[in-house]
Image (cartoon, rainbow, N blue to C red; front, side):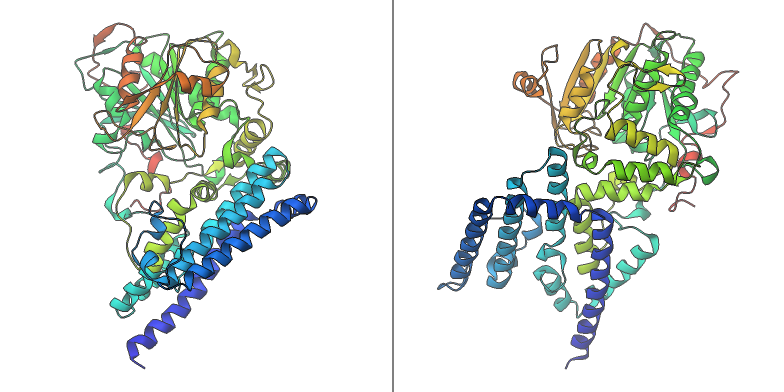
Length: 573
C-alpha cells in the first residue's frame, strides 16, 4: 500500500473518532433530558395506529421507489432537486449515483421525521420544542457532515495525499483547546484597530458598565442626544463594527450626539448582580449622564434585543417622574408569548435549577448561551464550519459579524435566572404591575412616548410577530418596520446598500400582525434611512456641536472603545 494511502486511512480513522466525540458532546448539550419529548411523540402516534401506519407506508413506498430508480438503466435516483441546499451543491452529490442516493435517502428520512412530529398531538409548546430537537438531529445526521460520506472531502483528501485530513485534525485540536468552533479568521480583527473605531471617549463608568460618548461628525447636532443600550450577552460593537457598517457612525452623520453603554463581561466578584442593577446602575444611570452632559431633561433612546427589554423596563420605571423623548426598539421582545425556538427550551425545571444554582450568586457563562444560539441555525453556524474546518482542512474567511457573534459575555447568574423566569417562562413584563423593578411597579401601558420598532423577517431569536406584539403593548405612536434577513443581518444593514429591503405600512397596528403585513409595502434599501427621518422629529432644535466630550461631572476617562469591551477577551492582547 502506498504510504500516503496508509497515512490518509489512519488519519481518517482518528478523525472519525474525534468527530463522533464532537457530535456526541454537541448532541448532549443541545438535547439533554429531552428524550421524554420523543417518547411523547411516539405515544401520541401509537394512540392513533391508522395515522402511524399511513405515515410508515408512504415512507416505505418512497424508499422503494428510490431504490428502484437507483438500479434503473442510468443508475440515477429520481429524487427532489437540492440545488438550493448548499450542503449538496457540489456536482458529485448529483452526478455520482452513490452520493446522489445518500443525499436523496437522507431527504426522505428527514421528511418522514418531520411528518411524525407534525402529526403528533402535543401541546403547542411541546410541539415547538420537538420540531427544534428533530430539526437539529436531522441537521447533525446529514451525510455531508461525515468524512466518508462527503464526496468533496474525499476528493480533496485524495488530491492532497491526505494533507487536508491532517490539517483538519490540527484545526479540530485547536478548536477543542479554545472550546469553540472557529467561524472566521480571528486574526483579521482587533477591537479598537479595525472594529469599534469610531472616535469617542469613556465619560462614566461603574462596576457594571462604561458609558461612551462619540465625537460629532457634523457642525450642528440635535439638542437631545441618543443613548444606545446594546445587548449585554455580547459586546456593544455590533452597532459600531467597521466605518462602512457602523450604526453609530450613521447616527453621528445625521446629527445625533451618540452615547453607548459598554456592558462589562461580568467577573466572579460581581456574580451577585440582579436585573434591577442592570436597570438602575446601567440604563438609568446612563440616561442621567447623557442628559446632564447635553444639558437637556429628555434624551432619545435605542435598545437592541435584551438591551431593548432592559431599556423599556427602565423607561417604564422612570416615566412618571422623568419621561424621555423617544424609544427605538431593535429586534426586541417585551411580550414573550412566542419566544421562538429558544423560548421552547425554557421550562419550569430548567428555570428552577438556575435559580437554585445561582441563589448565592455566580456566573452564567456566555459560551453556553452562544452554543444555544448557534444551535438555532446549526447548518449555518455549526455544521458548515465542521465540514470546512475539519473535513476539508480549510480556514474560515474573515467576517466581522461572526467575530462579534463569537465574542460572548458572561452574565450574573441571578440576573439571568430572573430574566428566564419573568420573561421567557411567565411573560410577566407584559402584565401591568406584575413586576416591581427598583421599587416601582412596571407598567408598559403607561409609557406614552413615540416608538420606532424594527423586527427582522427571518429572525430566529426574536420572531417578528413577537416583536410586533411587543410594540403593541406601548400606548404611544408606534412606527413598526419589518426588515429583511435575520436577527443581526436585518439590523446591521448600512444605508446606501441595495442588498436588502424593509416593509412599512400606514400608521396603526392592527391586532393581527398578518393584517399589518398585508397592508405593508416593500421599500428598497435600509431601514436606517427611514429611522433617520423619523428620529429627526424627536431630536429638538439644532445646536452647535460640542467641541469637548463629557463635562466637569463626567470627564473623559479613556479613549473609546474603552477597556471593558476587551476585559477577559481571549483574542485581544
